[in-house]
Image 1 (cartoon, rainbow, N blue to C red):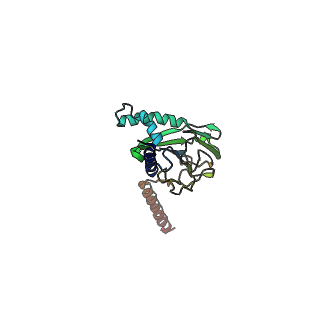
Image 2: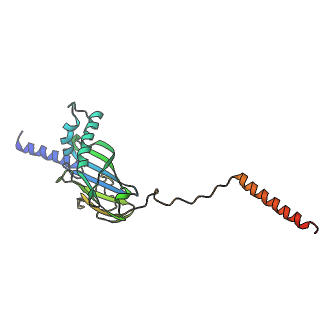
Image 3: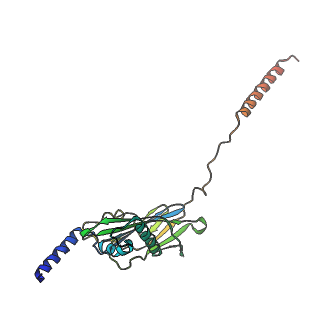
Length: 244
């Protein structure tokens, strides 16, 4: 095969890759974090979207028996290891103190990509409990994502919920959880891996004043009062009509 023909085939391959590859490029790893503030906890949704090449590099860690098929047990084992790794790369401070993340759920998806190579998506849900004794009237939460440092991709943080006074991250979801990337190449992808949020403490239902309750009076007590009143009025009338 001469060099000219080789160059032509290489060019066709590159065109095919560019036509069907990941919108952020087939070497990209995209990040998404959504923090939703509530009275008792902060819900954190964390997503990783690996394009074709990084997903291909993960295949030996997924297909442990090397049979070319990624079985459910292999997915679960991979996800268990990956969750631990990714969780260690997420750092949260509350009022200057490192705060733990409570894992709620995890999910992995393999989706079709360019040239029959899959892309890989990881969905992680966490809770950050807000304990009343550790909160002030106004609090500061700092979030930092240290995973896949230096890799290109879409890196987005969204902050929503109650009591937010100030946030370095917007409240609008631009990519719809990494499912819709802008088609305009002139739009620069966000590169947000850190956020700082000032928020007020929201009184919980348990701390709120209980609603007023009506005093329940038994029916027989009401009847007894009415009967007694009638007897008294009859006695007054009878005693008042007697001759002196």
